[in-house]
Length: 138
Image 1: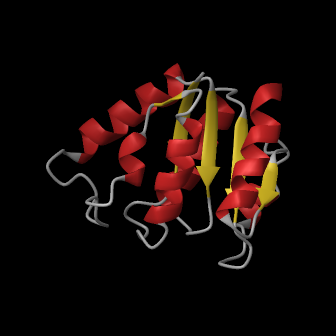
Image 2 (image 1 turned 45 degrees about the horizontal axis):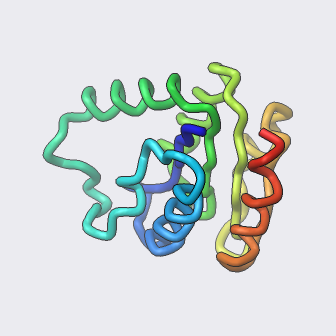
C-alpha cells in the first residue's frame, strides 16, 4: 500500500523523532511516499533547495497516487490541514493520529464527518498499536 504521511515541517519540527518512528513502522509492510518528513536534517525552512511550486505539485501528485493518508496532527500545521482537505476532496482514506497531551485537535478536522478515523495516543507504542489495528481494514 502506498501511504502519504502528513506531518508538520514549516509549522515546527519538535516531533521529528515521532515522525521518523511512525514512518519506519509504516514502511515495514508498505511504501511511504513522503519519507522526507522524518528526516532529522529537514528544518522548519523545509526543502529550501526546492521552490514552493515544485513542492506543492510533487506533494499533490503523491496525494493522488497514494492509497491512504496517515496524518500526525499533534503539532498544528497549515500544510497538514491543506493535505487533509485535499485527501477528502480526492476521497482518500485517512487515519489521523493525535497526541492530546501536546495540543488540541483543530475543530476543522475533528468536526469534519469525513474524518472518522481520528485516534488519540499518548506514546509511540500506542500509535503503533492503532496503526497495526487499523491498516488491515483499509
